[in-house]
Image (cartoon, rainbow, N blue to C red; front, side, top):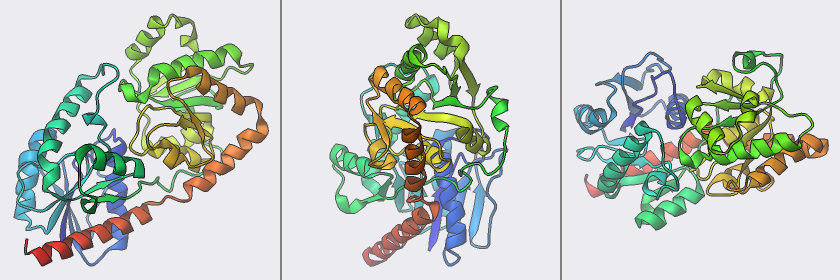
Length: 379
């Protein structure tokens, strides 16, 4: 087979969820499959995190302007390479493409009504673009791949996609997320001492940043230890707006905003944290849940969408709309040593069920299934 994989953003320095997913999938396919030929399409960037091998060719094409790259540059390059199929990995695909398409649809949050205004112009424009494109491509796809049973059922229901076109393949986490084996003080680049509460948030309403900060305020009122809160990837102006709106400016001195944390630093950040908060309102998967669990750091996550599925039956699940409930679990972990140790072990065991090797093996099976179907139909 001659398989194209869209990985437009993997060479950018500040990678995010979907970038890491396709990067790890490709790395595992390089180890797993030496028979088929792959063409990985990327935009130029400074972080050359992937190299070509005998049968996996890194094709650096076009510019970084995503709509033009995806709608013009990518389908042209795919046609030139005479591909059997093109796997687009980030929720959208070329509207006009002569090559059979597979699409990874991580979630359809962008199709759902927003509860609150998203203050990020970039995220709002991305939402509009994804809505426009998806409605024009999903019926053309040979397969739509998603990443959890929750999202699988949600996509079938919301988009009326036949089950035979849908595939569920779990994401995973990278092997460098493990309990710390030696002293590592990387956390000092972001916060002065370990034992903090860690939260990944941004201005997207689904990340539930405001309710999480309100929960932290309740925690501070009741805790004897009063751990600091490390907020990653959150705009300081947005944080200040939340504090002022809720008249809780007094807790500002307890909150550290780190900006973007590079992936190679995250294992130490999890290991040095007392607890990780993943209190989002809505997720298609939730890789950070597994990353923290694999490091042995307890996770408080939400009882909504895919998070109970990924966290497992013994995870700490809370109502993300209830700050008091989130705070109660932080305090329980702080005051109940047996409960804390139990959650450490629960997380370590749960994380073992997920691996990028399994993800890549299942992905290769899907490529083979689609290839056989295409040959039978004469496409």
